Image (cartoon, rainbow, N blue to C red):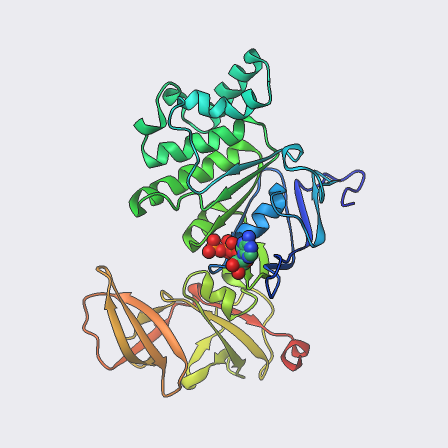
Length: 363
Ligand SMILES: Nc1ncnc2c1ncn2[C@@H]1O[C@H](COP(=O)(O)OP(=O)(O)OP(=O)(O)O)[C@@H](O)[C@H]1O
């Protein structure tokens, strides 16, 4: 039991979730835990097959748990039937019925549960308002754009008054431009709804802009779960760093002259380190992102360019740090030509440096 008297229980508390499909070798999900408060959005991210959908299904009650426990609003729900969990599911394809109006689609779940008509009308009106589609109530799903369909699917989930909303790749069915436009609107709707939301996405931009917290899964296991800022600035390992935004995480060593020495004799100054300063000789994890550098006018850190990609405003360089074999991806403003070697100066505000405790280095 996760509820402590005097404290507000978490809307979702998953502890050690484990699912082993029959006849499968390894567990699809192994020992995954996280919490989500009401009004918060958690993004489950990770490569294809890492266990995101299975985790979502365990919370909805569509897959049983082979280990661990699940509490909803502080009450154990590990074996609760799906229809009793008050969990709203928005599938990737939205699953709207083409022969029903938007309002009838939104009220479908309530009608199936024989909710009285007057209550149903109020609930549908409120759900349409929350999802910002009140003006579409009489249309058929065929007369809607992709973005409108997505919001109607959300309204249908809202109508049943769920305490938890589960969204499976909410923007995946939309074209890239519409996806960008809808991202911020969806964030506003989800936060205004006051529900706990768990969404699955492949897209790091979606995770960073929609979610308060992110859980990164890999091969069924949780690599890291924390606030978006925490994962961005202090990724637990190179996999998490790379997954959220092409970052490269490199282990370096603090020098006596307030810098960190990395591969290829690169030195990054410790100017903007906001946490505790490392002692000389102490190991540090340094997260370098494509936009962590400008082109140096004189001197600078040498990047040996292996390949370049023209991206319009910028050029993306794939290279090696100095004479080392450590790879790095850097994006610089397009315009100045690309040569075999490019000199860079670090932009300290976009580089994260975390001193590593000595015990962790030895472990
Ligand atoms: N019904 C099933 N029976 C057996 N194995 C399954 C079943 N469903 C999923 N799996 C396996 O479990 C693992 C996790 O699958 P899951 O669908 O949860 O991953 P995912 O992260 O959602 O993937 P994607 O991003 O591709 O949708 C995969 O190896 C998958 O092949």
